[in-house]
Image 1: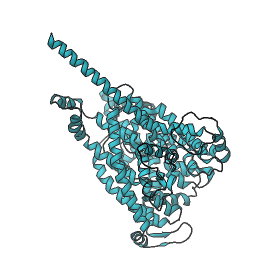
Image 2: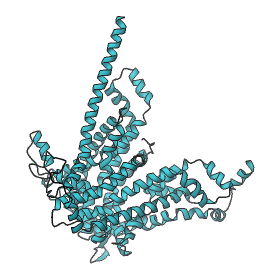
Image 3: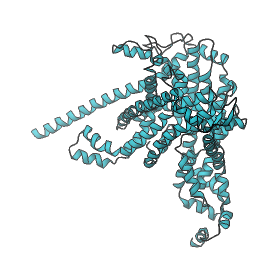
Image 4: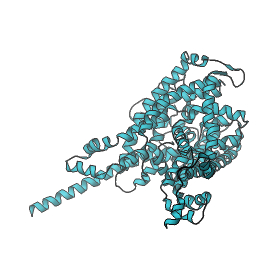
Length: 287
Length: 307
C-alpha cells in the first residue's frame, strides 16, 4: 500500500516536471519566433506609416496613422510595376523551362542506355558544387558579346537548364518502378510517350519540389541579375529595390518595396512549404 | 509474359554505330542541358583562365599581359584586406551559425504540439531575398541612440553603437545578420541528421542511465559527425561568396572593413572595368573554394526527406 502511494507520487512528480519543461520550451520557442518573424512584421508596419523615417524601440506594431502613401510614392517614383512584371515573367519562364529540360535530361540519365551516359553524368556531377559566383566576369563578357546585356535572354536562357535540377529529378525517377515503363513499352509506347505518360505523372512530387525551389531562387536572385542588367526598365524586383533612387519619403518607400518583394515568396512558402523543405533537405546545395 | 520480355533485353555485342542508331533520341533529351553547359558554364571557365592573362579593360586596352595580373595581386593591399575580411567572416560565421542552428534543430525536434509551425517560422528568412533582409536590417542597425539594436544594448547597460558605420563593428554586424537569416536553413539540414539517428541508440543510453545531456553528448553528437563535417563545409563555401550585404549596406566600407572577395571582384569588374584583373582574383577565390569542396565531396550524401 505504502509502496503504491509512493510510486503514484513519483509519477505525478514526473508529470509535473515534464509539463513545466514543456512550458519552458514553448517560451523559448516563442521568443525565437519573435526574433525571426518580428522584423518582417516591423517591415509591413513601417510600410504603412506615411511619415516613416527610422525605427525606434519600443515599437507599436499598429501604425498610429495607417495609410498607403508609401506604396503610392513607390509606384510614382520608381519603375516598380515593370520590375514586378520582370520578376514574374523571368521567374515563371525559367521555372517552366527548367522543369521541362531537367525532367527530359533526368529521364534520359535514369532510364536511357546510350554511349557516354555515365561520362556526361559524372562531369555534370563534378561541377554541381562549383560556385557560379566565380565565373560572373567571363559570363558577363560572353553575354555582352552576344549583345544580351539588358535583355530577357540574358536573364532566362543561361538559367533555363540546371544540373542540380537534373540530378534531383534523376534520383527521383530512379525510384519509379521500371515495371511501369515496361508495361507501356509492351503497349507500344515510345520513349517520349513513356516520359509523358509514366515518368511525368509519377514524378509529380519531385517536379513540384524543383519548380518551387527554382521559382524562389530566381525571384530572390541578386548578383547575376545585377550584373547582366543596367537599364532601370530591365531590373528584376530585388535588384530594382537595391538600386532605386527615391526623392521623397525614402525609408517608407523602401519598406513598401521590401514588403512587395517579400509577399510572393512568403505566400509560396506558406503553400508549398513541404516541397521547399524537402528539396533543401535532399540537396544541401541551394541556399 | 516471358516472350515479350525477351525482346526487351538489349543484344549485348553491337558496334558503336548500331548502339548510337538505337540510342540517338536520348541525346535529344539531354541536349538543352549539355548545350547550355557547354556555352555558358564550360566556356566561362576556359574564358576565365584566358582572361586572367589579359589586360582586358571593358572600355580600352585588350592585350596579352602574361603574369602581370598575378604580380599585381601580390602587392594589392585592398585584395589582402579583402582576403583577411573574408577569412575573418568565414570564421565568425560558420561556427556560431552551426551551433545556433543545431540548438534550434534539437528544440524543434521534440515531440510537442505545433513544432511544424515553429520550424516554418524559423525558416522564413531563408526564403526571403537578401535585398529585403538588408533593408530591414539597415533599420534595425540605425546608428541612433533610440534605434532598435541600440535599445537592446541599452537594456543591458551598453552605450549606443554606430554599427555599420563603425570600422570594428561593421563586419560583425553583417555576420549577425547573416547568422539570423541562414540559421533556419542549417536547422533543416541538422534535423535531417537528427532524425537519421536510430531511436534504439537513445533507448540503450537510457537503459545505461544516461540523462538528457549525456545522451546528447554521447549519442547525438558522435552520430552527427558526418552532418557536422558536411554542414561546416557548405556553410564555409557559402560564406566565402558573401556579396549582398556589403553591396546593400556598406559599399564595402567603412575604409574597406566589409570588402569581401566577391565584393572586390564585383568592384574591379563592374566599377573599374578591369575584367582581366577581376578574372585573376576570381581564380584565386576558386582555388580557395575548391580546396574546401574537395574535402566536402568526400562527405556529401543524400539525406532522406524529413518532413
